[in-house]
Image (cartoon, rainbow, N blue to C red):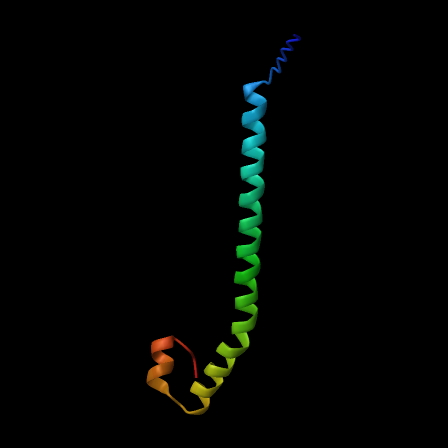
Length: 72
């Protein structure tokens, strides 16, 4: 009968650093995706906002313009 014993010593600090690195990478990816989505929404919504402001100005909706703080 042959018995083998293997002992692997890992530094607990190294394991902790690896775990923190993985979590930081995942969080960075999530933040990048959120920023991309927010930037895309802003870029897509700006023309619609300008269009709505032009309609407000053209119809001379002064009360709505004052509520939105838009100069006519």
